[in-house]
Image 1 (spheres, helix red, strand yellow):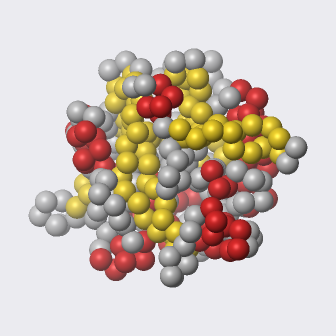
Image 2 (tube, rainbow, N blue to C red; image 1 turned 120 degrees about the vertical axis):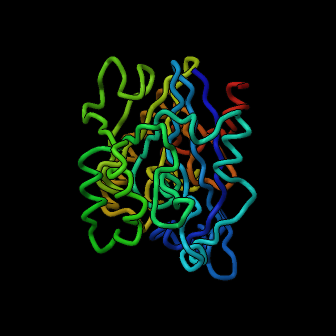
Length: 288
């Protein structure tokens, strides 16, 4: 097995929305906002080579949305999914498994692209199985009004229409791993959105956890630091507390999808609760 960081760029979201009830006087020190109160966030994905498979976890916003949509999110930076894959010696057609933690546009927008003749959409990974789960798929395709703007039908429905969609089994503690392989286990979280999947990857004696939106950045480690985007914030807090205690006990490596600076971190027990221990990149940790 090998693991690779795939950077697909940065985008901006309102700082208040990202930190919920935390006052701006505090959160602005964690991620300084621009003049419009917008903070920059990463769109960081993980690529796994394992037993002849090439597994990509999440894929960013993509590039098919119109100018009006992009003007709300200020996609910026020189990184792209295509360029990051190429830098590792791959392209989209090499991906065998496209794993989607959940179907919010900033996690799955790169799943689908415009057809060359602009007559519709097609899958961006033509040889990949797309992995989701029935509970979240139903939640995303029949969205509540609060989340509707994050579940874009053009990102979701063409996956099913392509015939490339498959389900991850709900059992999360299978001894033989998951559909992604023997070293990859899936845990479900329901506070941010229904049935979000959090992959745990066993690699070189360590456990790498792809945090998705359970922990967007190191600034979100304290328990009350929750996003206003969470549909069930008190459940998020409970899920996060349980997870972070285990992460500290077992020295998990937390791979951060949205932290604009830090790729990975570890956490530790302190008198104030779970707090940041170290930050580093996958390369710093494993030398790959």
